[in-house]
Length: 278
Image: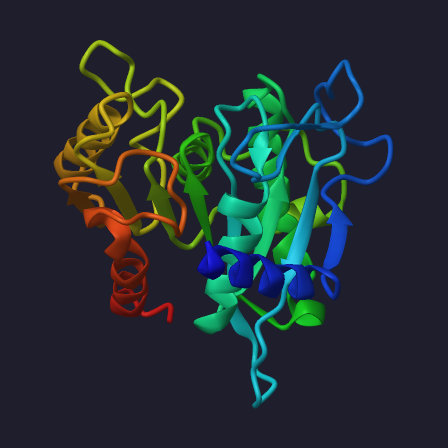
């Protein structure tokens, strides 16, 4: 408990100095927002879950680099079953960990609830938006990836294997920037299979899929099947990726796992180093 409190205190201090930007210019967002005002979903575990998102945002956690050089960056897609975004456990906590390891991070609060089309538009726009602001934010636009958890892992997978190069009509100069991530990390991703033994139809194996890391636990009975199927499909398509499958860990642990999957952050950093990002 003390460890969690210290981590939350550290994150709170970071949040006070962060930059928050709207993903879309006012009145230009494609698709639909939520029918109700944005609100918090209360749960006993104390983590923050935001639903009814109609104004998607990016919160920038900038890496501190003493030489002033541009940092690699990762857009963080929290989970929540597309019903809400768990913006701390799978958002700001992940950003703090990435900062500690030399990455700038941008936490995406995407449209909810049950708005997968809107969420996809949000993450693609976010990738273009970061590249358009790369010089100002001291980000290396050629080392920009995505990491997602559960439903956010699904969103990160779709961003890296899109059915359409861009899921909305370009609205301004920002959309002239690429919306393809340079790498993707999928942590206990959900919804990767079609429930019939194949890959979900909203994942395009013929796309230019970047290097991908899949992280899952074998005891996550609901969603690990999708990761296994996606792994095999990437193998068959000869797409560069790695699959870290741990015996235990369950689902939804973020950085708080106490079982076999607790080593996933170290394994992810090794993978990033191996593909030349870190």
